[in-house]
Amino acid sequence: MTSENKGTAQLTAAMVLSGTLGIFVVESGASAFNVVFFRVLFGALALGAYAFARGYFRGHGLTPKKLGLAALGGAFIVFNWVFLFKAYEETSISLATVVYHTQPFLLVLLSAVIFRERLTRHQLMWLATAFAGLVLVSGVRPGDLGSLTGIGFALLAALLYGLSTLVTKRITGVRPHLIALVQVLVGIPLLLPFADFGAMSGTGSGWAWLVGLGVIHTGLMYVLMYAAYAKLPTAKIAVLAFTYPAVAMVADWAVYGHHIGLVQALGVPLIVLASLKVNRAKSPRKVASSPAPETAEPPLPAPAPAVPTGR
Image (cartoon, rainbow, N blue to C red):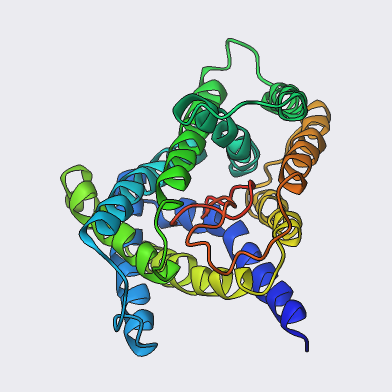
């Protein structure tokens, strides 16, 4: 098996796992703040154990400035998860996931506002296309307060994810696993005031889902992602990243019977196409040196080429 084929298998596996994230969140039965608190707690244990076993703490390359940037990115990431999971509560996993995947365009707008980067005619065209797709995907009327609230939460999550991407991109010379570890560790004290431990007394089997979110979706999934990023060109990462929303939509339909309507379905390819066009405009360089791939989720130290993972 060639290095690129191995990377393809690793990233596909990571995106399939990412697509099941919403199921774990819903089945845990916990509030969004509790879910994220225990995700970062168990995730820190999993990532810390992996980094220690691999010897990543030796010559780690972290400086006070880099730690500060990682911590700031972590604050954006953990609250990004909170709002994404609240979006699951207000609307369906499918709708929240698709709306969340407008993150690449929010990242473009953030770069234009913060760094005064010029928006090209090409970018504006695909931004308009993505917005049209978002309008179709929302498929709600002004009176549908629940869905509108869920869409708002998903957009806010995408915005926070974009901010984390901008911050984390400024960190160089540090393994992404360690950046991820710093970010989840920061999430523990940040979310502690919002966690309701009294509500966890009757969680029962929900603990297994919470442990899974930490070990599988914040440990195993990110190890697979970072291993794959070093082997794949940016364009291929962008294409494979859409395995995540596809699996999320299928899982939401199979487990909960949720699906998007015909008109909403017309918006999905518009968002996907616009994301790919924006991403393919970037250099097809390898991303081995990048600490923060721009893909969504799910999912942690920010995304790989301009396609989100909620992860």
